[in-house]
Every structure is written in structure tokens, then in C-alpha cells.
Length: 126
Image 1 (spheres, rainbow, N blue to C red):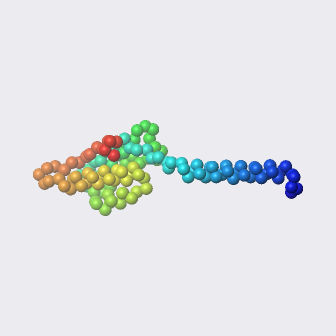
Image 2: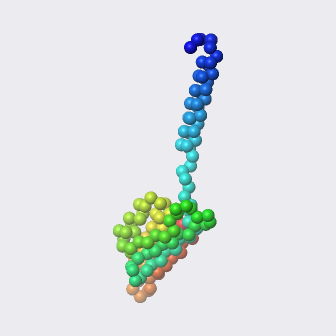
Image 3: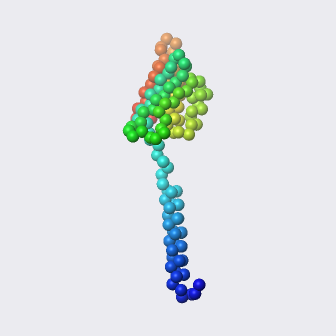
């Protein structure tokens, strides 16, 4: 290119704008908050005596999240409950902690006292 050519300067400035635009997009993506998961409004944990299994229903405020877990079932075995604590969905992990809490409460119940078979956790308890 010729030194005094204005076209060179225009191309150079356009390339610089593109570089700055791409940097801005990249930094905006890095600084964007991670996708927020919808927090449950209520979690209902019930114990099925016949099947020796916990069922956990997760209730959300409307609108419900797309693909959000609404029901978690787990056998009343310590290892099964603990395995849910490493689940990818944070709401399933939260429900697993509440199942674990009810399981501990049931195991500590005295012989003369009936063990609870259900527990409700509201948003303030979560």
C-alpha cells in the first residue's frame, strides 16, 4: 500500500473496531452472572412405609423452570441419599439434604414415639 493512501487507514480502523468489539463481547460473557436456577417455593418430603422409600416433591413459583425437577424418589438407604448430594441439579441437591434431614429425624425417633412420615420445608427453611 502507498503511505498516503486513505484506504489503508480505513481498513486499519475497521480491524481495530472489530478487535475491540470482540473483546467487549468476550468480557461481557465472562462477567455475566451464571444462569440462575429457580429456587423452590416449597419441598414436601414423604416416607412410604410399604416401599421403604422417600419421595420428595419440589414446588416452584410460577412460571416453572423449563426442565426443572419436580419429583425425586430415593430408597431409604444412607448411601442412596448421599449419592443425590452430588447431583448436577442444585435443587435436587437441596432436596437430598432435606431428605437426609428427615431420615436422621426418623432414625433418632424413640421406640415408643412414632417417627414422622412427612415434612414440609418452605422457602424460609431452604
